[in-house]
Length: 121
Image 1 (cartoon, rainbow, N blue to C red):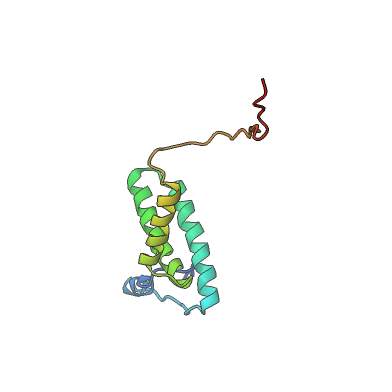
Image 2 (cartoon, rainbow, N blue to C red):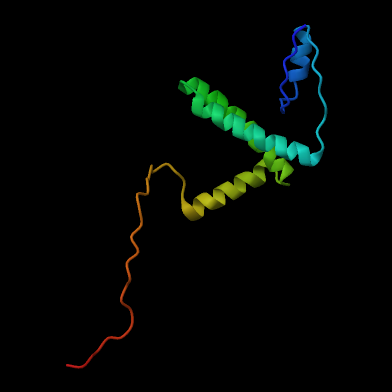
């Protein structure tokens, strides 16, 4: 019988889905620190899959997967989804979003002349 090794974090129902297909899934429950690291790896994986998406439908599927991982990451960092949303909204209020499609090319630092003005004629 062939064995496929994955060694990665999977969604909660995946072992059940595998067993319904007549296969055996060997799993373990991760400790907190390992879980956090596995979520980071999973987020990178989902991001890469988004970049490899070939159409809008695939892209949206990958974004949905990434959101699920982000929810779990927020929890391991001690925040709820609502708290993460509050942080996001605050940053948007302070710095804006991305709807205006602004692409920063460069910044020129100009020295402004402040200070001494003569009122003598």
